[in-house]
Length: 512
Ligand SMILES: [Zn+2]
Figure 1 (cartoon, rainbow, N blue to C red):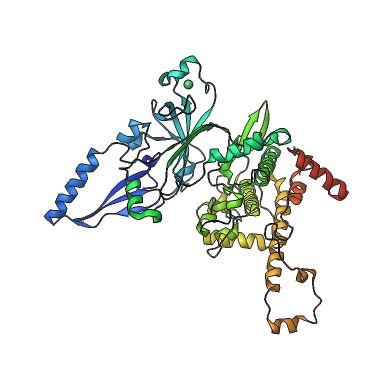
Figure 2 (cartoon, rainbow, N blue to C red):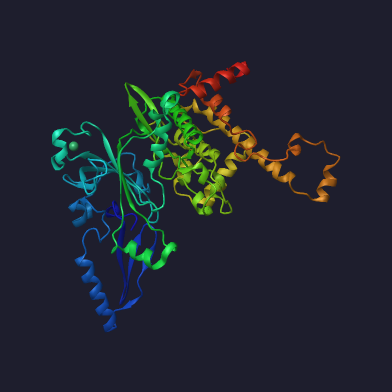
């Protein structure tokens, strides 16, 4: 089901499973999978019920079938095969559907709520759908779909006086978040309010949203009925959309230094958003690191703030809520089944470390993957298929090895130094955490045994700073590692980090 192309732009889907004379109807939506009772076609009553179900399914509107309201893509409805998978030389056997590109037939369009005049309800705007460039894997979850779109000026009366999206490259992002989740737009608005004066630089590194809308499920939708029936145990969702500026992927970059600058930019932006508007991103992945070009200068953009949260809400909610991210890049602690949160700033930095490790190993240049990475020593390609428990163990071992030789390809050889230094910070930090925890075990036998031993400094620690792993994951280390690449200075964007860097280099000339 999740592999079917026709599931893009869908809030739910019905499926009928038939095994000889038995059958079930199954409803999949983004929160639950609901099975009907077993029908036995040998029984007249069940046969009648089945006939009624089929009749009902046939009479449903496209919205009742699960297509998002406002979607006009008849070709997908009538023939899912009309959603054409674009020829992509990088698509490999077994690659997940999310990384494939699907072309939509000409004329496919989408109409959504849009306020031309602020405060005035009931107005709409239409865009033409061009191609699907990203879609989530799996059934349960936000089910994010990203498509390239353009303003359908001929359908929008107000475009006749002048279209404000003319010449802009646009994308439509649709997802089905929990109805209580703050929107990406609300987080970005908080950033915008504070990004003035010395802080204005950060806007170059944040996505630009042109409009945002929510479409609630109607009262007769399966979602509303499940919510009425199961209350809080059913996660009620909303269809949420945004029209955003189209950004370029990492594959658009030409040199290793450009990649390094983009990673450095994203880390600076991430820190600013955590420190000032106090929002933590929580989903750093290769796909969320994008590029914007302004007057020939390329800027790293930290994209997709859908899973972000306010720092003051980090400790609220069940542990399952802390476990956010994209599996290959999640911090290893989060993938331990016993982990209970909270999601910390340093967990996102660990994600940056994995993004850089995978990217500089799996790619022989930003736009090309080696044809057969599986014959190499490290099987990072499989990270995209592994489950949490396995990935947690693999990453734990990677961080726990005292001397690590980053497997960067020749093109990305300059990243070896960065990755080695990042690794040392995490290695030392977790060793430190480990030693501190050992020291908390008050076993008289161990204390007698340890008495004649010299007391290492670590044992005098009264508390351990989990946020910085005892001082090893700090902005000071990050700026020292990332401000230069291969002996060349990179752009440190904000005045705060520029000052920090000057201070650090002044205090320790050896680091310069
Ligand atoms: Zn227009």
